[in-house]
Length: 103
Image 1 (cartoon, rainbow, N blue to C red):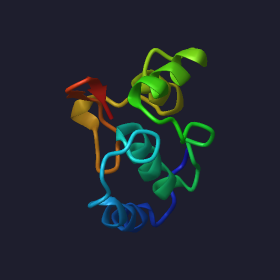
Image 2 (image 1 turned 180 degrees about the horizontal axis):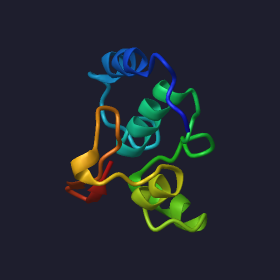
Image 3 (image 1 turned 60 degrees about the vertical axis):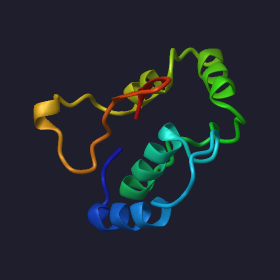
Image 4 (image 1 turned 90 degrees about the vertical axis):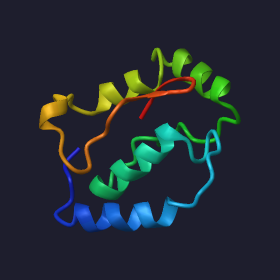
């Protein structure tokens, strides 16, 4: 996925739109937040076909059914890995979350 020429502006607009959106599995969780950011920056929707699960458990089951151990594995299959020291604005990061790794 290639970033759009105006990706910084598009990302800023997206972040302003979702800053107060509550966490809701299948609609606005860590994976879908990142997918929205990627879509804003590239125009490509990496979450096409994934939205709509009603719980994190259901989301994990959907991932497993398609051969992914978790949302991090799915993201890794779509995005190039960047060493933390080389990360830049707009790059996706994996962080420790209460229920395991989060994006």
